[in-house]
Image 1 (spheres, one colour):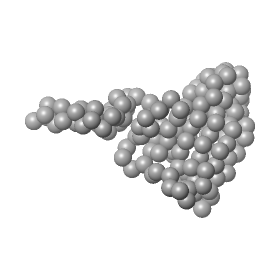
Image 2 (cartoon, one colour; image 1 turned 90 degrees about the vertical axis):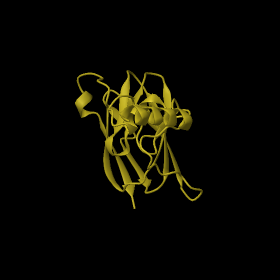
Image 3 (cartoon, helix red, strand yellow; image 1 turned 180 degrees about the vertical axis):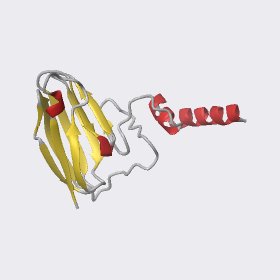
Image 4 (spheres, helix red, strand yellow; image 1 turned 90 degrees about the horizontal axis):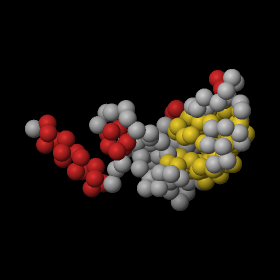
Length: 153
């Protein structure tokens, strides 16, 4: 019976076009890189999402486009303020070495290589203050590399 259920789930994953990481996430596995509910990046061309509760932008959703640069050991800007339910589009680059952009509450964890530009999109559907941290070790000041995302009601 269990083999039939797994086979059925695997078939469903293929039919739905879910990638391996999304399938692993659905099955409770911790493998693969996910961008979180409603978040995607340019290398996630099919828009696969973690979980099934993602919030899609509507025509009324304002879009906030932000040029975001990581450097040793900070972010510019280091504070991002957006309205709740806005579609946030970060155009992220790294000035010097590889850095990470990690926003736990939004399921975002992207690696940005030196000279690379990566677009990270998500719906700011949770109000509050959220830390932006570097998830890629980038030298002695790595643990001090922080920014903040403020989502206002």
